[in-house]
Length: 87
Image (cartoon, rainbow, N blue to C red):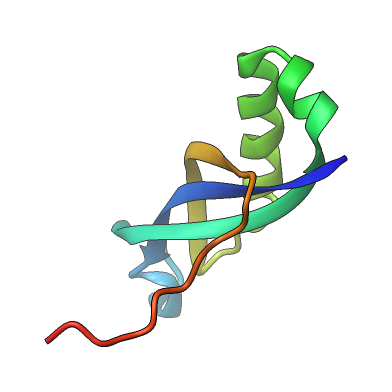
């Protein structure tokens, strides 16, 4: 069975990119959603899962932005959307 996993990452922006340098600034939290085999997720060592997700996230990095793995959560039932606006 396939399950969705929500990966939480720290997002960094390269403030010096346009001047040709590197100066990374943390800008907040971002999320990636991936689909994985639930048996792999359930029966792999936690460190192996973190390592694979860290590699996957690192592949999304560029010279302008980069991401750092924080945690992951299994979305067994998906994400429920709540209607309404909080004022």
